[in-house]
Length: 355
Image (tube, rainbow, N blue to C red; front, side, top):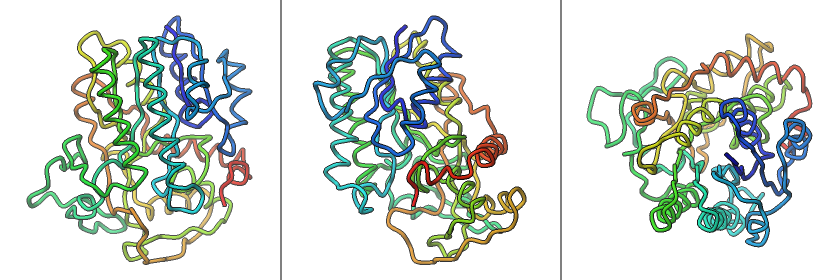
């Protein structure tokens, strides 16, 4: 089996390449990356040592994609991953659409021409911001929790947000590009008869993750706390009670491997995340960091920020039922892994362009 990974020099692409090589026998993995993100260049050496062939190309350029070798499967892990993309002053709305949507369309054309299956990595941020902000939450000490005592909207429950939760706009420009890519992928697969799996990912976290809080809050928080860089509890009273769940790329790789092996009808949309057992508030994450790196208090900034929501935990029950999949790495294990990386790489945020 030959697997093409787009965005292979990013944190998720690199992690999947390594993990899938361990999980699939007789697999040949190659990838493409435009190396535009600070830090991605550093992953080239390790991937080459692992026998992964790399191509320098830009998915926005159809000619770059057409020049790639044939593959049996494509994992689309290339995207601008920030929910603030297009409005944060670092990228324009047009650049966001070109990267996240047109890049996916060119990838789909590759799959159509080569008869390759596709595993598309989407996002939990395709879900309606208004619906997420309107969830009934209550305060449990230093964290929000979903109040399940009354009526809940469709797709919300004690285990988190399922695939049935509304995707009604607004979902952010970033979320809109991912939702549009999902639709195009499913249509291409149905029209041209190749398998498509859409995985809506929660917060991926692990050692070596790049960038800013919008790209990986758990990793960023540990590095910033240990380096005594300014941290803020944004919105929701400035108390840090907002909650997200974390999961590791190794667990995502296990699901993708199961999807590739699946013998029955393919397709559909699958929520993938750490779930309620791997959920943590910023305040509790800070307390963990205090114990590990010494006390360091974030500033309180109650001013709300665009697109932020108080509670978002992914319910992966459908993937568990269909594939027998569940995340194996607990949040404590993930945080310990990141903490080791923090100790070994004290200047990491500077290396990957965090300001």
